[in-house]
Image 1 (spheres, rainbow, N blue to C red):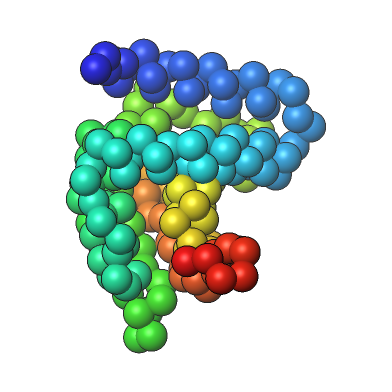
Image 2: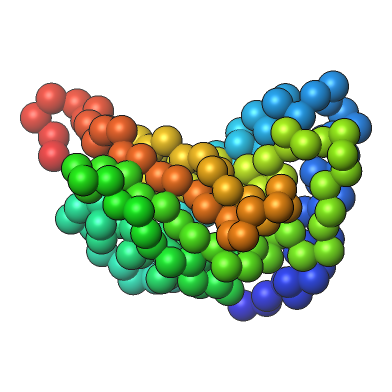
Length: 170
């Protein structure tokens, strides 16, 4: 297996975001594109993840959070975010990224203050979880690029997606 150097990945991602900023008129459109691209990556990445990680089906959202933080982020980005701020119902939590490898060497220009630079990650998480029958809302609530102390991704369980199997099949 060949691993891309983290610097090359970071710089390539930066070039992608720069090009999207040139192609779209405003940050909201760039944010949507990053989410859409991430979603498409997540839909495909989940198969690789399941094959390489030997992780079985998660039984609840807490177990899903653990697998995302301790296995998936470690496998693909080389980091292990902490899991915090669980909602009382257990259907929402935060991933705290002490260091986000996507933002190495990055400074947001003043004219892109509403750009969610790493929004691709939200799409990846949403797309991957949808493929394992979990609908989630994923959004950035804090970002070190915007002066926050940490980067925080908030994940909320929306619903379990029912398999649409033909009648009589399981």
